[in-house]
Image (tube, rainbow, N blue to C red; front, top):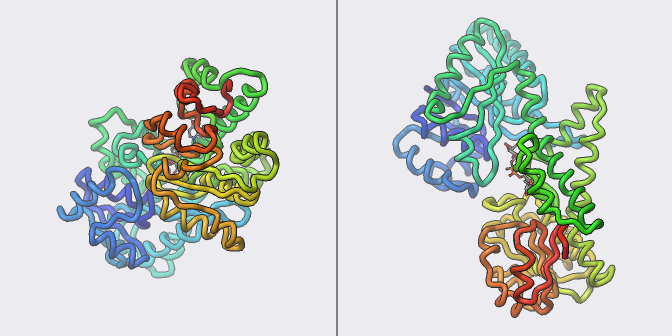
Amino acid sequence: MKVTVIGTGYVGLVTGACMAEWGHDVMCLDLDAAKIARLQRGEVPIYEPGLRELIMRNQPAGRLRFTTDVAASVEHGDIQFIAVGTPPDEDGSADLRHVLEAARQIACHMDSFKLVVNKSTVPVGTAQRVSTLLEEELGRRAVRCGFAVVSNPEFLKEGSAVADFLQPDRVIIGCGSGTADRRAREWMTQLYAPLERTSSQLLWMETRSAELTKYAANAMLATRISLMNEYANLAEALGADIEEVRRGLGSDPRIGAHFLKAGIGYGGSCFPKDVRALIRMSEQAHVSHHVLDAVEAVNSRQKFKLVEKLQKRFGASLSGRTVAIWGLAFKPETDDMREAPSRCIVGELLRLGAIVRVFDPVAMPAARRAFAQDLAAYPRRLANIHWASSALDAARGSDALLLVTEWVEFSHIDPVQLAKTLSMPLVLDGRNAWEPSLLASAGIEHRGIGRIP
Ligand code: UGA
């Protein structure tokens, strides 16, 4: 099928590349000419396992094209995916400017039936707004061609986005029931036909339900994490081990084992933003949101847990202390620094006077930009960040090591060598990535989150 994807961010690029992999004829549009030029040269602007290979295979085969030409891209796709960003407004609600602008561009250039698919994370009612906008614009142009708008939210996770797209648990499609919607159903079924080979299912529902499902899913997962973090703090106070509690909980099929890892809070471009957007939607609908408020409050506090532990050990001021940080990205297998807990942790350590030695296998360039931005008003603090060349280099001479992002390579570290490298053998494990006994065998004191010391 002929598909256009508007927006080459995370979701747009993965959607375009995967659709091309399925054999569809895909054109990706972005107004950022420099980004499109890089993509045309085969350079992938984000770190995402497997994505580069898909682009390198499908672009030369002619199934995947990148352009800045709006008219050509609207003409190309019978199906027009809107996959542009919906950054948070000042009040936390999703900013729909780019979504509505994309819809307007489609309406300005279309002269045949188009199926418009909302892939961006958008508040409930957005498909309706897009429909109204298309109608108005087409009316203004006196063009009489039909269209349908469906909601097809994305559930891919950074770091496993390609696999999540190609083998999803389910595909949610929100669709109306008019005549144009029948054609929309047929086309969406054809588009996702390659999934028949997997056990994935298409879940059809009302458009508004699909829109809400996206936020509800992210907020549900965020809720599990915040609840587990609260349990972890309780376990610590009561002398229980959250990892054992997790095993006990996860083995109940009604609860399930996923997203129960306690740690230093969730980050990234989705959970924090979507929880806030859902709170805003609830406010606007005059519906209470006590649980969501608590999820956010627990998460904000949890990001400072490791610093609190350090202060308990060394006193309120960390002046004269050197602290190693392993992992900066908000989670492994990505270089994404958006709302990464490392930003709060490093900022707070520097404020308390510490020197910080940081290392991340992939996110160092992104982290440099993030910290330069966060600390723009504090150049002296910024100068107290030492950018290490390896994990052990970061640990060298440090009074404590904080594990912030659980990259696999950190779990393979030799504890004896680590003990020799640190100036004090203290490890605060913000992701419960190590068995305490492993580090203890090398004489390292290991403190996890919610674990028995
Ligand atoms: C999340 C959802 O998992 C995807 O389904 C969704 O499509 C995506 O948001 C989105 O809305 O675009 P993502 O933000 O890439 O995906 O990352 P996750 O793997 O969900 O992790 C989010 C955060 O939760 C990370 O900071 C991670 O460290 C934390 N986390 C995750 C925990 O603290 N404990 C867990 O058990 C799991």
